[in-house]
Every structure is written in C-alpha cells, then in structure tokens.
Amino acid sequence: MSHDEGTYGPDEERAETLREIGEEIRGESSESKLVAAMLYRVSDLYDPDEETSPRDIYVNMREIIRTKES
Image (cartoon, rainbow, N blue to C red; front, side, top):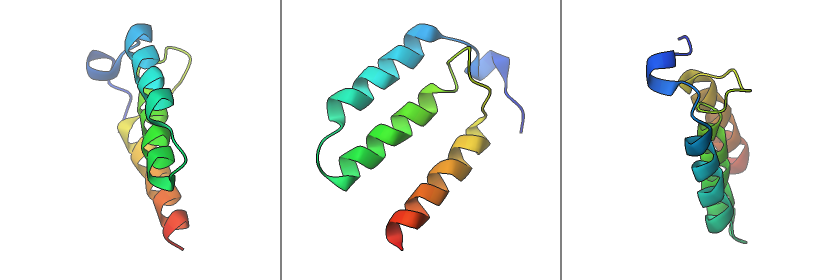
C-alpha cells in the first residue's frame, strides 16, 4: 500500500490538530494513553516530514495493542 497523496497528502494543520487532541485526551489511564498514541500515529499521515501509510500505522498499533495485552 503506497502513500496516496490525494487522500493523505501533507496537511500540517490537520497533523497539528490531531496532535493537540492527543495531548488533551492523554491522561493517566492506559486507555487514554493508547488513544493519544493512535492520534499521534495517524497525524503522521499528514506530516510532510513523515513517510508512512495507513498500513504502517495499522501494523504499528496492532503490535502496541498485542504487547499491551500480553
């Protein structure tokens, strides 16, 4: 799966918004930290300095969740 510029092209404002929301919801619980981490990873889709795809994010988050469950 490649980085689709039409759908996930650089959008610094969107990346920043997702990261701000991640900061706002990050709390002490592991669930809020996990959701914040997901938002940060999704924001990478819109960061012009990052090269990632939805599949990369899915695989990364799947591994984090599996590790958490262990």
